[in-house]
Amino acid sequence: MDSVGAAALVSADGRRARSVKTREAIVDAAIALLDGGELKPTAAAVAARAGLSVRSVFQHFVDLEDLFLAVSDRQANRVASLYTGIEYEGSLDARIDVFVNYRASLYETISPIRRAAMLHEPFSPIIASRMALARTLHRLDVERAFGAELGAARAAGNLRLGDLISAVCSFPVWDEMRRQNGFDLAAATEGLRRTVSALLRTPTTP
Image 1 (spheres, rainbow, N blue to C red):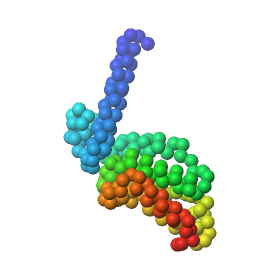
Image 2: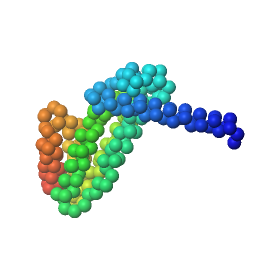
Image 3: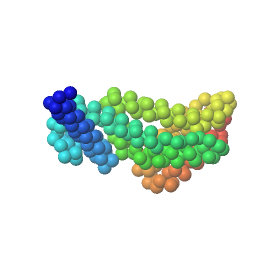
Image 4: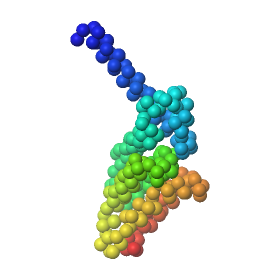
């Protein structure tokens, strides 16, 4: 490769690196606004937070839904890092502790973005699909944690115990405790623990 070609390659690599950096800065700005309680950040607000022009935002994202998809991807990575290493082993009490403590940590981490996602869900097919996936994974995790107990419940005629546990351990219930009812973190976690324990210890109740 001659010097002209090498210089062109270096220049192209530099542009790509700057483009990636700018795109990440836009996503960071959107997340910062969401974490700060802005449930519907505008392109202008995102651009101002990132120190960019609105035009720059739309050079990197087709529209705000495309930006929210990138935010969702970043959120998924945050969730995956929290879930890494989670194992459900030992006694029922031990598994309940792992399950509940993980959910408390998860919900405290994702609360601002999840609230925004719930607001946008009825109007955004992309966000709706991501939320549906999150709920499916949540339900599968209930089965993973308490498969033996849920199997016994189904054999006894209670076919919906897993769905019930999934519902009472969902983010909206957690958010209701924390925001509307004023539970602190310890009280909300303990309330969830007692509820799950009570449900799993009466498995024959439909």
